[in-house]
Amino acid sequence: METKLNYRIAKSKGMNWLIILLSALCVLPLVFILIYIIKAGIGAINWNFLVSIPKPVGEAGGGIANALIGTAIIILCATVISVPVGIICGIYLNEYKKSKIAYWASICVDVLQGIPSIVMGIIGYLWLVLPFGGHSAISGSVVLAIMMLPIIIRSTEETLKLLPDSLKEAAYALGMPFQRVILKVIIPCGFSGIISGVMLSVARVAGETAPLLFTAFGNPYVEMRLTQPMQTLPLLIFNYATSPYTDWQNLAWGAALVLLIFVLALNLLTKLITRRWKVQL
Amino acid sequence: MEQTMSANGFVNLQETTIARKTKQVNRSNNHIKGEKIFKGLLNFAGLLLILVVCGILITLVWQSLPALRSLGLRFFWTDTWNPVTNVFGALPFLLGTLITSFLALIISIPFSIAVAILLGEYFPKGGFSNFMRSTIDLIAAVPSVIFGFWGFFVLVPLVRIFEIKIGVSPNGLGLFSSALVLAIMIIPYAASLGTTMIKMVPSALKEGAYALGATRWEVLRSVILPYSKSGLFAGILLSLGRAIGETMAVTMVIGNSNDLPKSIFSTGNTMASVIANEFGAATDHVYISALVEMGLFLFLVTFVINWIGKAVIKRFSKNG
Image (cartoon, rainbow over all chains, first blue to last red; front, side, top):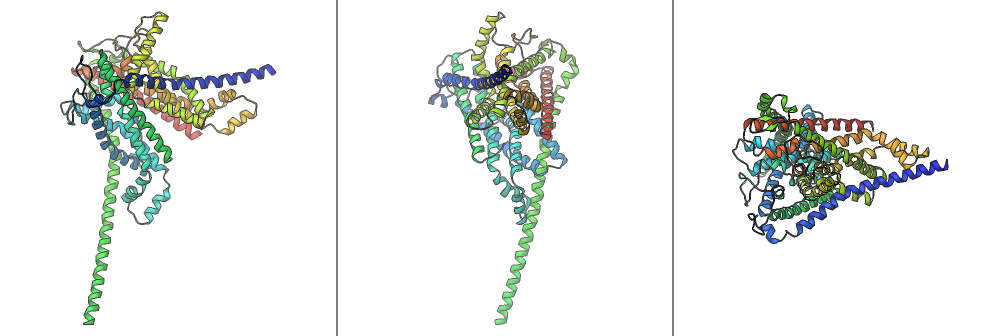
């Protein structure tokens, strides 16, 4: 009896430690990746790295200015496209829960969220590159915007769902028309939730490579025109990391560090916002 | 004189009232118009969503028709992939996707369930729990190209050493390396959903088991896990969906060979990675179409997996 009890307690303790050990092992990859990328990338980063464009193979130096500018422009365009559409769709899904279209639209949001990014790349190519005869930054922006939509829609919908009905009823009782109730009362009240959804979606697509392979395509020079191919950070990392030249690989490590810091900072910021304003996502 | 003044005042008053009334009518007319426009906009947005998804599906089907017509169902079970002679068999890539994602799933399951138990049962709140949760979330946030880059320079040499030790050809690159990278990448998805599901186990059940003298492990094994198993299953399914569609990390460490994989250590290609590698360079009509068909297949598979996962979650939340 005594030994059996001891065995059971020992087993329970053992499993306890096993679970803690396995969980601790899950943290390790992130730590390793962070350490390794910081170690490999920090040497490449200096002022010159941020303001000059990549040099041809064999020449030392060079930077990632083209990718930084390209990423900024493409992400900005994607945000400009997806934020209004996403917020309006979120409002629609929240306001018309019972309609048939809203039901199907809600399913479509789920489908959209599950589409593999490479398939979105194909879609971007077939919709925007083939008909207009060439790779362009704007096609990449549109694809990224479509990928941002589900996150923005869901966060808008969830935020609005949490707002008390009395808010809306009070606004209606004052004689406000529907569109004003939504735009002047509901949206401002859920603003922090919507903003964190937008930031999360930006963080998600900032590191996307696959959809841009056939759309924005990449460009070794600084490019400002939306109708031309443009370089982005993930594309630069992919192209230079798989190249056999050490100079280019070092450039890619530096770019990886910049991208990682940007994405992780955006994620942490979103987390802080959601905690600060007690938003649930 | 006095009379005219008062009459004037009266007239003025009347005029302002009328003016105000018309203003009010105008304004409420404007409001009604605005409301109509706004509601139209909302409806349009909902329709737009449906249109986009249907458009994606129709485009994929339409563009893969040439390949379907010229290759038929042979596409899925022949293993020759030769763009020069326009013979396309997707079997190596189907197998590649199947092996990498399921291997990744098997590797990740113990870890994701351990994290789910840790965060759902052992440390549901507090500083340590927050730290763990943030870390796991951040793993999900790391861009896949960075995983691929890191895997290529860190994991692949390690795998090569391991392969030399067990005496298989030391590629380093290959299905096994991709499965390892994938496993790390998908842990957060199964873990975060599993945490939610384990938290939903009613405490009365757990307390009852403790009162009967069960140890912590026994409560876990015979109360918590059976209760939340469908939820955990759903989380694992969703992470499988991620693994199947994952592209960049896999492309960088799988070795990119179009032959049928002989073992889990040989190089190969998944459906996603072959699209990433070849779609940009494909020129022939049937070639592009064959790649699009693979994209369509990926889309459908991930759709079905996500759909089942979501259905299980919905049922579980209703019961719970």
